[in-house]
Structures are given as C-alpha cells and as structure tokens.
Length: 264
Ligand code: 0L1
Ligand code: MG
Image: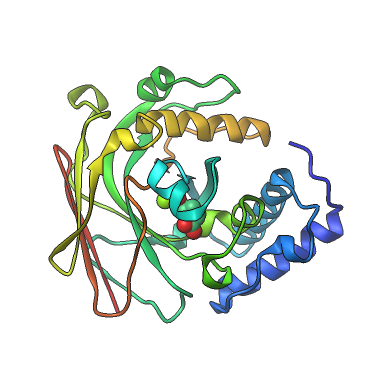
C-alpha cells in the first residue's frame, strides 16, 4: 500500500490525531483539509501513531478488525472493513469501571476475540489457517471512541484514527475453536439490564475467522504479519451502542459465557 501524501504531511496528520486521542478533544475529519488522502495514507498515519505509542513505552498486544458487519457498515456509511492496533494501556479488567472523562463519545461493541498460538501472514490467509493458528476464542467488549466530531468521517480518516480504538475488555470462558460453531454463536448485549442488541457471530463477514483473515491480508499489504500470542478482535456483531457515566454493559454469549464493563 503506497501513500500519496509525503512524510511531513503524514507526521502533521499524526500530530493532529494524536492530540485528539490524548486530549479527548474532537477534530474534523482529515479529508476536509487533505481531500486527496486515500486509504494508504490513513494506514501510514496509523503506523506513525503506533510507532509513537510504542516509543511512549507501551506494548503492542494485538489488532482489531473493524467495520466487519453489515450493521456497522450501514451505521457508519462505509463498505470496506478496516484494521487497527491494540496497545497494552488500552486493556481494562473485566467488570472494571472505565472512565469516560478521557474519551470523546464512547460506544461499545460486543465481539469474538481470538488469541493466536502461531503467526499468520500473507495476502492469501484463509479462514482455515486462522482457525489452525488460534489458541482459543473468548468474548470481548470494544470501547470505540472516534476522535471525529459527531462520528463524521470517511474510511481514510477513521483508519488514521486507528479505527476509533480506545479501550477493550476480555472475559467469559475461553474455548478452543474446534469445540464450537463460530458461524452461529448467539450473543445478547444488555445495557443497564435492557437488551440493546442481539445477533450471531456469523454477522461478522459470515464467520469471525474471515475477519481475522482479512486483517492478516491488510497487514501483509503493510509488510507486517500477525505474530503468535496476538489478541485479535474480529469486529462488532451488532451496531455500536453509546454509553455514558453510570451505564453498565453485559454481553452474554452462547458457549463463551459473558463479559461486562461499567462506565464512570
Ligand atoms: O471497531 C469498529 O468496527 C469501529 C470502526 C470505526 C468506526 C466507528 O467509530 O464506529
Ligand atoms: Mg470493533
């Protein structure tokens, strides 16, 4: 993937996104000032952010596939999935209280997460290869927080903003992939005890392992691979749901138990 913007512009855009991420002050989508910006430029900004994050002393723990369900694509007005990186300081413990004062407008997504035991790479990664390289799957909640005002963005901008990644929580009951049917796993999302979303894991590109294969293909276009021991979120099964202080979210999964988080 070859960026069209020069290194100075990529660094300037990374400054802009990084400031919004660190201050929780929203910005306008990047293509307002850089209309020529394309997907490769978005990933170049994302890679620069990742380099800076690691330089600040944090560890890369995995990756996320985003915009992988029809519900999410329709909700956000895009038609191509994306990937983003997950750092150690984004992880929160199950049922912990997540602060919202350092976020712009958090939303939650309930996802199936994969933990890998072998590396995956290349432009032709398949569902079968992903399943063979998976140590176990477990339920996860992603807390996304687009840094763009009013969640108004396009694909290049949201990729530059690391796919709106903010926090994530894993929990429930880890299972080997051979023990469950990952196409038909049911999930119910509750907010403050009310059901606010429900679906099956097949809503994620037909099979959540296909979302991981898509992620590996994008990584290969960035000359990267997915190392063994990675934590990978495969994408929201339903639309994302807005949360505010006082809210609690529980996601109950068939076969995988539940995972929860609170907001303060
Ligand atoms: O994980 C996701 O699907 C989020 C993708 C980014 C778009 C958004 O902020 O909703
Ligand atoms: Mg997500």
